[in-house]
Length: 527
Image (cartoon, rainbow, N blue to C red; front, side, top):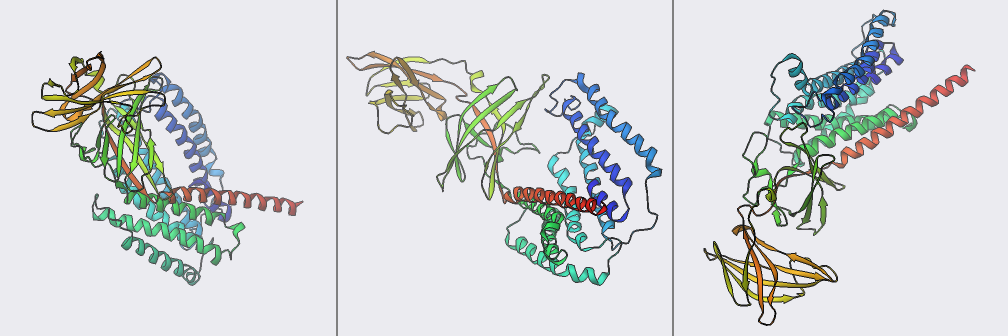
């Protein structure tokens, strides 16, 4: 907002006060965000309060040291700042650039106000509840900001400073408008954007925002030829606007078309349904068990805790059913500080050129904390049967270094596995393969589990080699293994976001280079 007002002042002498005000506020808000996330003032509502409350005063003073003198100087010097009393033409570029800057300013104010609700509650003693759907509480307003900014980004380039003849403006803008309208209608009708979760009104706003983003991209691309006659050196602003439009389009389409992958196929839920989370949309994974998740098989491999940064890391193996691709994701959770309950998830993602797979942990259960049961020894030979509380276990045969095994046998190990069948009272048969693996003087025990029977069986040792007598251990536990619930989304067309950012930066650099060259030529002419 400040930069655009600065351009307005450079070309028309309007908006100097707005320029300084926006610059001051922008820097102050950077410091304010530091205050929010580091002071501890959000300790009850956010895990980002990494520093204790003893830093609150220092950070607040840091903010005020920059904000108060700057605002004092602004008001002291405001009367001496040049202003123009004449009303701007509504067909001038500076008028609509100023309107766009105000829209950006109001957008920022809304975001700041919503983010600062806990601060207001703490200072004023109020009890303003946070929104049930935090993302939608922002989106239902920012989608209209996106529409306005997109349209202004498209049309403002075709306006001249001071004033623009209406016939000239219409002659230049009609073709980009028709092209953008046609492209957006193709996307709306054939792009399968059917986001009715928040109602038809919000869906209509999404389609309007798609048009606005495409309009901004097409109009600015057209302006390079229609307004600048193909002079790319002078097209930095248009290139930056095209990048912004692509970024906006990528955000809208990828969010509107995001696909939920984590449909719960296990029937196990670790939490009750709430307005924020639905167990049916969060797949429950059992550690070490390959689980079907629609287009993928997912395995919860392991987890580890880093007490230094209060994080618990999860390793997840994804297998694409159709392409056979295998990749790993490592989401983590951050434990709340100051003795609070709960955690904050930190997602991980898999990048593709056309989409992102985005996964984060919603809940987990550590079985080791609740496991007080022990292994009960039992002697068995091939063909023998032993019993557990809900059925029996049969040893079929002993396998030495089998060529095909569900367990991973490492190079140099000699494996001895027990081919066993578990038969429940209901007559259901389960195959298990407990065993041991020996490498030099290192023995590795390989237990096997029957999750449905809450049963773990392991091979303890050879009791009598001559008679083939073996000892196994049997353990029954109500909760057999670590559990976690995972939410996974697929965001299509996310590449538009990254391309948009890159193009926007390129345009910004082009504008800087152009300004430097213009100033150098001006200095040369003056000397």
